[in-house]
Image 1 (cartoon, protein in one colour):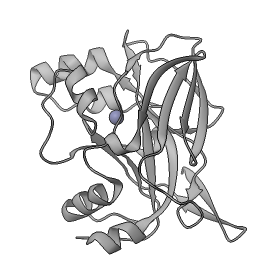
Image 2: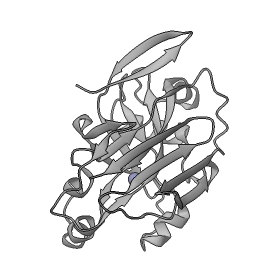
Image 3: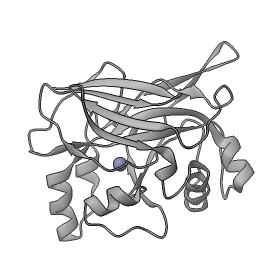
Length: 220
Ligand code: ZN
């Protein structure tokens, strides 16, 4: 079982991670860089909680891919069960914010897309979801326009702001909860800005979101 923590009023609150729901193509410039249309609704896929790793961990590069990409993303921690949420309920369901990496085997994804098959194996492998410590939603003044960056070995690869998201965190929670119940401990990866690129074994990745968190992982 994977667990994440939140500090609320100086007390550590522990959450068992449930499903990891991911949004694809949530930044116009990223949809365009991969030659995809800008979606009218959030594009949704899942990762299993066993894929989750944390700050300081190592991602083992799967040997069946030659093109693992980094995708830096804002991650939401769901703090209460919600179904068919309205704006208010969706907002209150977000217990924490973190920065994460949705690691993607782009060569495999392109192959699967071409065949019309699910992306599952391109998005799900051990280490495919990295996440920083969570900031308590009640303690930070989340503006939705924070800087989001990813450096590989000190070189900036992704550099954007959260207001470039097509669907906001509240809109995403509303949409997902209209299709499936969100439960305490579920995580939502909200999509990546442009600049996704290949990582190599030995690379050090530094992900950062202003006022929210930072995350460092290494590729082996
Ligand atoms: Zn992603």
